Image (cartoon, rainbow, N blue to C red; front, top):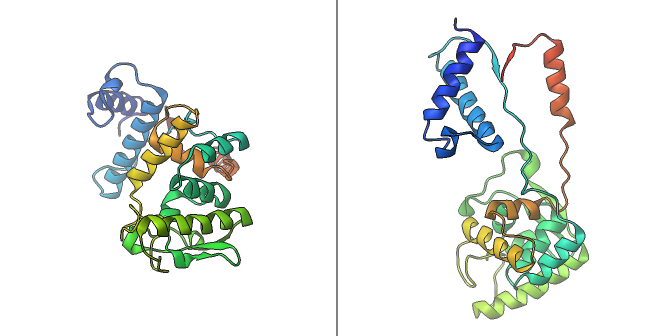
Length: 244
């Protein structure tokens, strides 16, 4: 059985030659690249153990925790700047994401029948036609919305009807790829549109996915006390040593 030191040495040599991690990793890798490399190595070795290509690993692979610099929660004044800079299509999506806390894939896969203006509320459920399927039972839910969001949704309904040139049906997408389209707004186009709003609002030129993450976390706080508790319990139980 190889020692933990030999496993670490071989892993580092393998990762520096790996095209998956990128050219930068051949020099001095950044914290994000090291975390990506550790996740990749952990997945490969665990898969090899499951396939019985390797025996039990002599140590556990520690994946460093790296907080992204592009995923802060938006402040109220920053949300106001975003909404002011957004156009008639981006504005309702950003407002709905901030006030509901739902992810953008959950929102762009909604049809008008999922929106209840009386409650007001929006229902998140499976939409195979949009390529969206909730991962857990809890993901299928009904989210209550503030009245201001419902009012803006009705205004957006009229604007979308005008741009589409026809009356909207309950089976139409709330956020179509183009006005009148029978396809939902594509993820890449959504990320690009939100990034342009960030630039227009003067919030910086940040990656597209990071813009979406900022908007999605408008109502969500991030805390992971359970993870720390599990790690402490594992150490107390005499778990295997970590590969650092």
